Figure 1 (tube, rainbow, N blue to C red):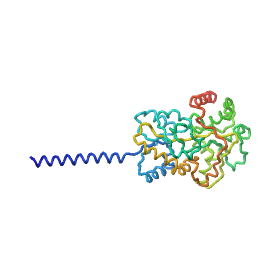
Figure 2 (figure 1 turned 45 degrees about the vertical axis):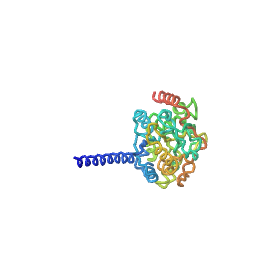
Figure 3 (figure 1 turned 60 degrees about the vertical axis):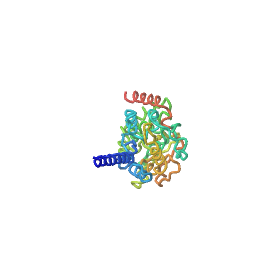
Length: 336
């Protein structure tokens, strides 16, 4: 009986130690969950190189979740609320950021010292800028037409059927142009759109379809980004396509990364953000075809063909209510 009791004690001790070991192992194996937009997670996106590099440097494993575009990702997090499994959200742009602030923690990353103040759209640092772009019209230099010098210039007869626009209801790039036109013309922005509707070859539903028409030669001017030529230089070894700078200014879009309040891995999340804002900046800039937020980032020579405008309008500066009002007025005028 004594031997049986002793054996039982030994077995219970072994089981107990095994259970504790399993718990410790499970805790060790827990991954940092990052929600990111689809293109970041794609086979050609920055996630392919940034995530493994972070894990190699820190030993922290990451589960990256492709959560749709920026708007879909935002809605997903809001819908999941307290049950959202994400520790970090990456890719919320400044024009829609207000809705997610209540769900995020502030983080004063030491990397902010290398980020220009004009890029910091959230004073409480719930979203920290990691890259940005400026909308522009890209021009086929082999087309033989004169480069336009401003938004107002585009309504000229010489550009009849030579410009491809994008719908702001279905595309963030189109929305960027809508905000750009409002910042440029004020309450007269709809007059410009009505004139451009007559001039434009088409108003495409999205950037991919618009840019595809452009590269197929359907029209020599398309709405895109000042960084778009970088792709052509790096992948096609051509400087044929140029971004046109307007002295009056360009609309900017700034993408941020932040920590969810419900995260149980706050320190790991901070380490990831610091990495994104430092070591990850070059890959993010190149593979996203965007400018890096960190002003100390070393970029390839191809970025010499991505000129930065002297004046930028911030997409989030007008606020959500005013932005919705502008879009509603555009929809009423342009669909009647």
